[in-house]
Length: 176
Figure (tube, rainbow, N blue to C red):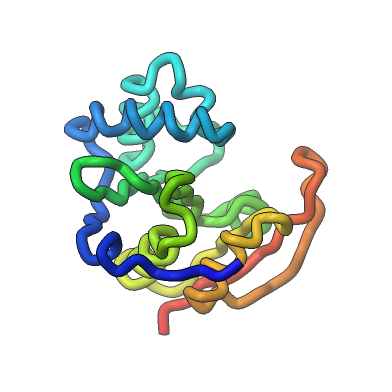
């Protein structure tokens, strides 16, 4: 699979912290993500507004699952449409350091392979990482593996996730 950048897309993207003003765009994005069977958005399908509000609250440390640090969600927006989302967990614990990592992201299916995920991850690396962060992906997710490696992710190890029944690749992103 060849990953190419669509420079017209990249040049016009904005990456913004999730906010209530993104409600209408988020409803559309949630439907597309559910249609693509992204598990993270299944909980948002029936009430995307409440889900967005919860994600916004996470950034200030509110409503978090037990033991989780604040999680900031950023949207990648193009022409009034959310085309990708990236989440950054701002803190450490054993689960973050060794299993899920600090960063999670997805791109709308219609824009995969056009540089959106790479641009979002580079943006996080250049604007939010002060030292280093862990990022993981399923071993079968070749696209995500390529994105992480393109952003200079340093491979650390592979572990088996019994919950998901799959090997997980673990990387470290470091500020140069």
